[in-house]
Amino acid sequence: MPRKISYPLILVNLKSYREALGSRALAIARKALRVSEEYGVSIAIAPQIVDLRDVASTGVPTFAQHVDPVPPGSWTGHVTLEAVKDAGAIGVILNHSERRLRVSDVGRIVDMSRRYGLLTVVCGDMVDTAVALSLLKPTMVAIEPPELIGSGKAVSRVSPHSVAETVRRVRRVAAEVKVLCGAGITSGEDVRAALKLGASGVLLASAVAKAKDPGAKLGELARAVRDFIDRGG
Ligand code: G3P
Image (cartoon, rainbow, N blue to C red; front, side, top):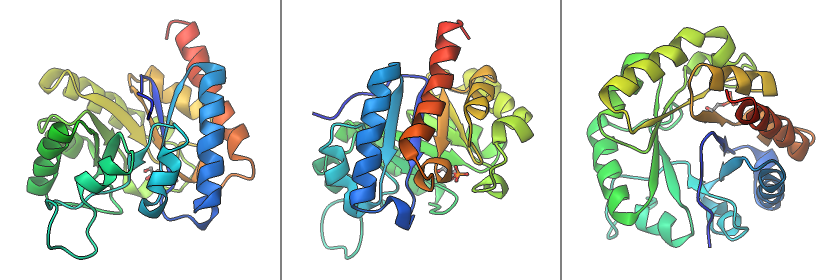
């Protein structure tokens, strides 16, 4: 049975990295589960679609990286909500800057996801976009400036204002929507900075997917979350 998530959340997007494909995705998922148990911190994995069922079967909370805005039926090469739900995902990432959607399609998928009992993480590339998308009432919005993606320069440290401002404005217009931040998140310090700014978690990719030792990297990130919780913020 797929686990539930809690906040603060560490959501690891494995993207299309070769280093995180197939058996390597599974190994990362198993490490994520172990680290999550050790620190009592929620870690979820978004593998490539072809690895979704295997990764979900480990019991780690699993997200699809994208779904298409179509119902089941006569479509070719599309990924449906029904398919990712059937594969064991508990949620979907939508509108990542590497896989954008029309706003109307984001809205449709968010609504359909509710009916399927799937969580939604909607990405926005800047503050205004993230705030506007929060009005669609996804479970989470993620503020991710594209220029920082894969840069190793954490949004929470080089652009703290964008995180704090997203948190402040989303609280005002859609208080139930959690705010994650992502792009360049690499270290425990980056995670701590994100949480201090009011984020409910981080969305990251390369620091884990391309790490020599993904388990050790996940441990560093989870320890930062644990410390933050134990110190009361
Ligand atoms: O989805 C998370 C991602 O876009 C951030 O990538 O490699 O900067 O952690 P990265």
